[in-house]
Each structure stands twice: as structure tokens, then as C-alpha cells.
Image 1 (cartoon, rainbow, N blue to C red):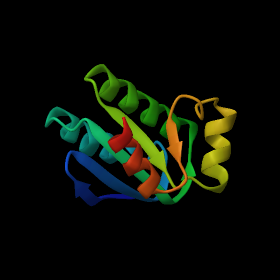
Image 2 (image 1 turned 90 degrees about the vertical axis):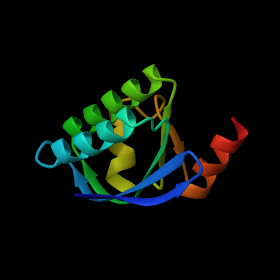
Image 3 (image 1 turned 60 degrees about the vertical axis):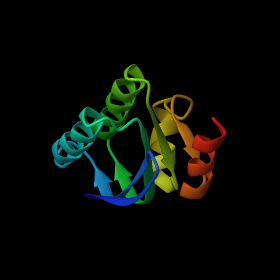
Image 4 (image 1 turned 30 degrees about the vertical axis):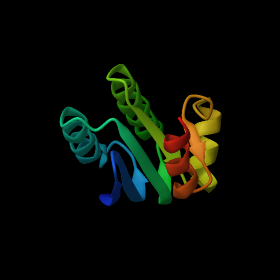
Length: 114
């Protein structure tokens, strides 16, 4: 999986995730996100348009990072979920935990509204 800063708009960072998120590649993902959180990031959108696979371990990583960000007054929003990634969130009953948006633009607008 590759994770890269897609865009920064004001105090909102948009990260694009490509490929899959599992135990083999999540350490890099966690390290990069934790560095951003420690640096003061409190609004994050993960663009999952290119995310083709997520394991239960990957779901746990997203949950942990979201909780950590929330504990510091921030929020993680997911955008562009599709296929098996949506199913994995639903089966794990995490689709109610995350704010999920059809696309990045809608997720971005939700930060402006809130």
C-alpha cells in the first residue's frame, strides 16, 4: 500500500491510500499518521478510492488512529470506500463508528459545516 499526502486545504489533510492495508504494510501507515498527529494534525480525510483491500488488522489500525485523534480533539473521516472495504467495515460493525463520505469533496465540506 502506498499512502501519500494528496492535498492540504487549510487545516485539513487529505491522504490517498492505494492498494491494501494489512499487517504487512500497516507499520509504515501508522508511523506516518502518528507523526502527523504528534505534529498537531487534527483533521484528516483518508481517500480510499484506490484502497482495494483491508484486513481485520488494518481495520484495527484505522480504529486506533481514529481514537487517538479523537482523544486530542481531532477527527478522521473516510471517503471513496468501495467493494470489499465497505463490506469489511460493515461486517466489523465499524461503519457506524467512522464518518464515511461518498467522495473527498463531501468529506471536506463536512469539516466546514461542523
